[in-house]
Amino acid sequence: MPYVHYNGGGRYRTSGHLFEEGDVVEVEEDLADYLCEKDEFARVEGDETIDEPEIASEDTVDTLDESEESAESEGFDVDEWTHEHHYQERAEQVRAGEHDEHLDAIAEAESATTVQDAVGERRAELEA
Image (cartoon, rainbow, N blue to C red; front, side):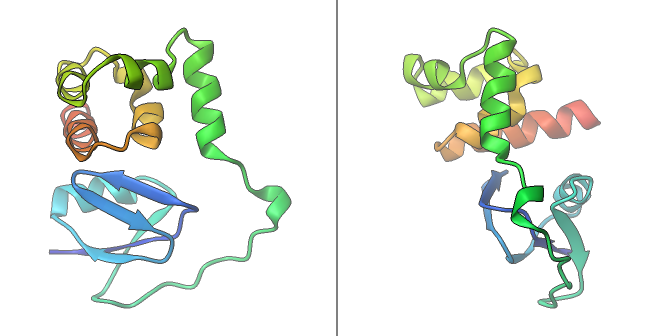
């Protein structure tokens, strides 16, 4: 199985994996393909790490704030949705494709592993 290196800021959770900045994790091939499409991930050999470019703090963006603003501007409030629905119901809604346009916002805000897994599964279905 391939290894991926996470060099994004903060935490990223998908398909039962929690990544923190600098992590090198062994994942399934399909998940590695999916993650490497994102700028924050790269394939590496074993536990090797990659050189990270220096980024000035003024060049960084708070992606959670952007996700929340984007979702709220489209009439979807992820915090409200999270508080109004039980995690199993949220996972079912994600798997059913009811919130495909808000998967990024849900992934950023969601703390339930079941829902995070549902987001990863739904993303894989959409990419297939």
